[in-house]
Amino acid sequence: MKAPRYAAAMGSMLLLVAGLAQAGNPKLPPDLAKAAADYDQAQVHSDRVGLEKALADDWVLANSAGKTQTKQEFIAESVAPGSSVEPYTVQDETIRVWGDGATLAGLVDFKGTSEGKPFQVRMRFVDVWRKKDGRWQVVYTQAARVP
Image (cartoon, rainbow, N blue to C red; front, top):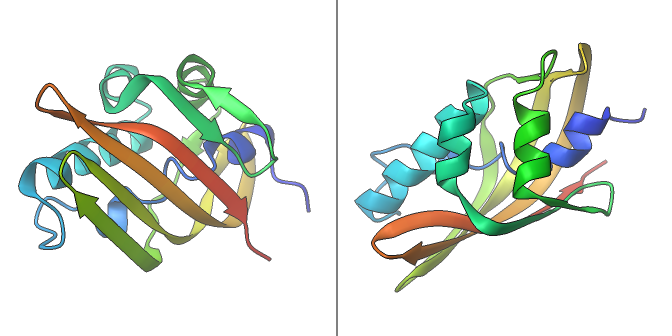
């Protein structure tokens, strides 16, 4: 079954934060945990301003369809009417933090609607975060479908 366009584009963006980056996650520095939790909320609530804040201007998504997507393209799809994401749980999480960088990764069963049509896809993802000028942002995301 082919996932709708939004599901492919979303790739891993929505996958990480609910399970990994809750504000109290002891594996993350508090400011990164908050940034990741805010990012999660922005995605679930289709919050354009929150997404603009969470994603670096040069952010790139390598999505599950094998294509790349810019910040502007992703946000436009994320806030489009008929697109939504359901809450999810991250499995098989991997967290690596160093100085001003971090990778947050895992496996998720991702559900929602795209262009008003329901989708469900299992994804493995990696989000790369950078701390610049005291603020954490996602600079790169990669997602792959898992059978």
